[in-house]
Amino acid sequence: MADTCEWASKDPTIQNFHDFEWGHPCIDSNELFEKLCLHALVATGFKKKTIEVEGMDTSQFSFLETRENYRSLFAGFDPDKLVEFSNEQIDKIVADEKEKEKQENYKGGINKNKQVLKSLVNNAKAFNKMMAEGKSFSEFCWSFSEGKVIIGGKSEEDLLKIATEMSKGLKDNGFTYTTPTVCLAFMKTAGIVNAHAGSCPIRGECMEEAKIFNKF
View (cartoon, rainbow, N blue to C red):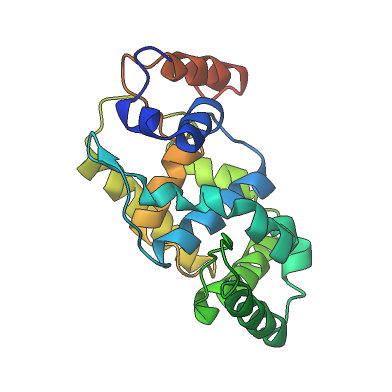
C-alpha cells in the first residue's frame, strides 16, 4: 500500500494488522478487554529482536504470532469464562507449553510468567465488577480521550500522560499489569489514538469510522 506507515511495510503480518486493526476505533467492551490483555502479555513477556522504524518498536505486536494460541488457552479472553480459571489451570497451561516448546518448530511462544497469566483472571474479575456496577468498560476506556479519537496535536509525552491517567484508573478498579506503556500501546491499537502517519491512507479510513461511531 503506497504511503503506508513505513514501520508496517516491513512484515506482512504486521502490515495486515496495521491495515485492518491498528487504529481502527473499537467500541466493544470485550474486544477492548482482549486488546488490553494482549498488550499486557507481550509487555511483560520475553523480548525478541524486532524491526524498529520511525521510532516504532514492533515488539509490542509480537502477540500477533501467538494470539490464536492465547485465545485457545484462555477461553477467547471471555471475562465470564476467564474468572473461572484456577491457579492450578494456569500452572498446567504453563507446564504444557514448556513441553510443547521442546518440539521442533513449535511456535506457541506464550508468556509463561505465571503471575502475569494469573493477572488475566484478576483483570477479568475487575472487568466484570465494573460491568456489574453499571460501568461500561468501553466508556471507561474512551473517557480518557473525552470520548473522541485523539488525532494530532499531542506529543508522545502528552499521550503518555493520558495513558498514565488510564493506568491509574485501571489500577483503582482492580486491574494489574496495565502500566502506562501498556495503556499507550493499547490506546493506539484500539483507535482511541489515531497514530497513523499523515500520509497513510488508513489514517483517513480510521477517521471515517470514528465519525460512524460518533468518536470524531
